[in-house]
View 1 (tube, rainbow, N blue to C red):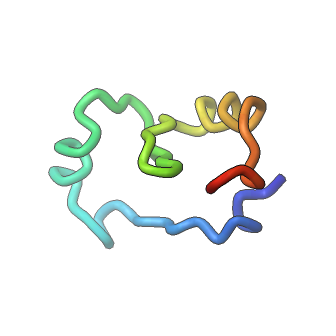
View 2: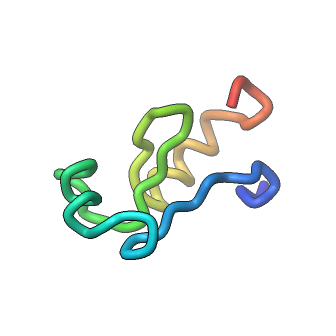
Length: 61
């Protein structure tokens, strides 16, 4: 499955918000990007891969 099929909102660092905003929102983040689904911070790419094995976008997304 490709995320593009789900029409995600993508916010860009230094375009949509500052680095300071990012660090305030994700103070413990060690990777970029940070992925949020249904208001839940999933984490980075590897965490997204794990999330996708346990969840489906056909659920209430």
